[in-house]
Image (cartoon, rainbow, N blue to C red; front, top):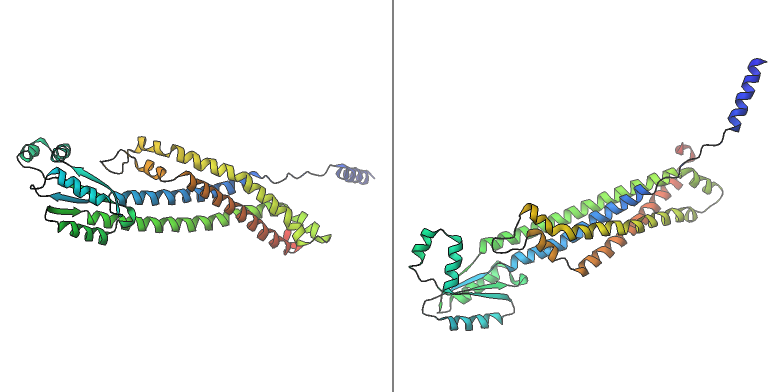
Amino acid sequence: MLFESIFVNFAINIMEEKPIKRKKPSALPGILSLAAVMFMLGLLGTSMVGFKGLGKYWLENSSIDIYFHDSINEAQVRQIEADIQKKDWVKTTKFISREQAMKEMGDKYDPDFMNFAKTVQLPLSLEIYPKSDFAKTEFLSKMANYYKANPFVEDVIFQKNWLDSISENIVKIQYAIFSIAALLIFISIILIQSNVRLGIYANRHTIKSMQMVGATNSFIIRPFVFKFIQYAIIAIPISGISIWAILWFLPSINQYTGLEISDSTELSFTRVIVEHINLNDLILISIGIALFGITLAATASWISTRKFLKTKIDNLY
């Protein structure tokens, strides 16, 4: 009787215990995952635009240098410069007088060499900077030969090897960016789908209960899709603000790296990239990333929910 009484009391205590409340799955991992994916893709998109502008900047800084005979005067060179500026392939020109040429040499060479150079009369010269669309080796070589045929011109030089190197590097950068983009998109799909599956798995019993009482698949899937679309909408400003903040502070990196485009310009490497990303580009990138994030969240949640709808009940335990 004693054992029977203890057993009955134990059973009554178990029945009177309150059911354990399960915590709802946190929305934070899903939101942060979507924000991280959109941030990476947004940063990649702005990098593509920035490096495209950087490549254009490099190409437009490749010049054709024309050196004239001593018999020609400055007024004649100025007239030739005016005619060249009318060409549709020319972005800008730069006239270099003898005095300016001597000063530029003085900045580059040691005093001993300059003492010798002062005994030589430097020629008048012109630097022609092409538009990026015309900064091709074949075209500039053709233009160099054309101006070299002028009887007043002593020599024409353009940096063929440097231009070829820049063109090759631009192509390599484009391939690298597209490869990284494909990899990030692939990783983002896996990352978001994994997070969506975790959220769906936490509600697996609810899904099966709804299915057992006759709810249609579309009725069950709809709230989960809407929930992850809400996550994406919340993640959009997080990723957008992060990208805009990086672009805002990026030019100041030069203070720590000291990386410059060339010795003849004060523009830093990072500043040139940022300056070629205008407001319209940022708005288009932001809209594109927002649409991509919403579409990806909706698609991933739809696929994952359908997978659980096809799962047997025994496999859920």
